[in-house]
Image (cartoon, rainbow, N blue to C red; front, side):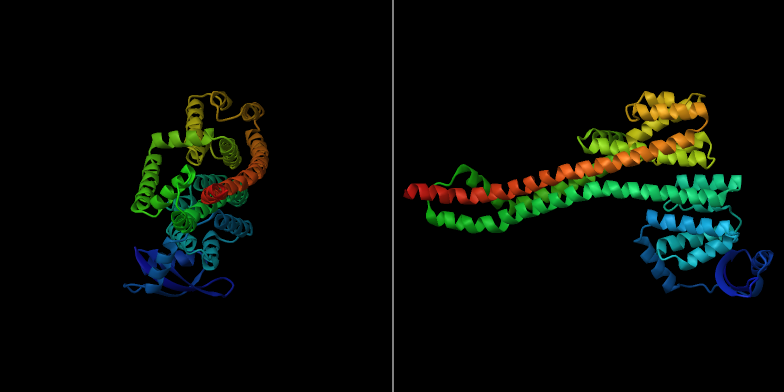
Length: 408
């Protein structure tokens, strides 16, 4: 394949310039002419380094494609396809106005693949870092059923709902994380900078220091010694080993199982997992994705190894001709209400509607759980910071009280 630059005039008389790959200029000319374009010029792209392209690609490596970018892309694509705009022209327009460099580069590669004869779903499947199995499966179902625009709208709605759910969960995690970091920083600053000043005063006064103050002084000296560096290195090594362990199948099951059993946070994580399962499964079924393919996609996008294992049991049961609700009732991951709703959906043939209702209900449950958790953590964190600061202050003033008592 050779890279070519070409200049064409469309049916409305507008001149466009772009890049394409083809075996020869004659093949590219025939391809462009078949699309109703008047070819003005075709030239082989000069070999060599294009520093602008290399710079854009290098910047794109550090960018990520957020759910918001995927929502915008899906809505734009759906609107243009509904309006009857040709797919290649749609991709070209979206590529030209895309701000995210990684997304722009990926969509340009998708456009080139479609121009080379691949279907849209197959072209997207070549970029799993941007288009996951769920996205590709739904686009493939939309292509097969001739409802690509409708499927893209559903994808945009689904991704938007998932983004809102992720935002709610992050809001529950940000507050305690920030407060804990501030508490640790305050404790470290007081032991490292303030307590040594009082330590010099204690030596001048003389006498035996209280046991608690001696403990704080020893802790302060340890934090200012080489042992603190050793402790930090051990913590970093521990986090690294934990991440390595989490990449194994057994590690994921153990750690995700512990996360589900955490008091307060475990219930929130389970509700998020159920909401994600219901929303994803319902969206795939409504888009016309086959049941087994939908369960396979849900398993890979569960976000929790314990939930993925439960979905795998459901997949195996359905593959052998069984129902969905029965294996779901045998696991503690799915609450009885979810199992009953799925059973009713199977019996009435409205499984996608029931799953959508379950997802809406658990989205509301997640929102309520986040509010309850935040309201509970606020006073706990305030008392915790006050206790940390107060414990150091008490340790610093205990010798002063001792000296006053000795003077009396």
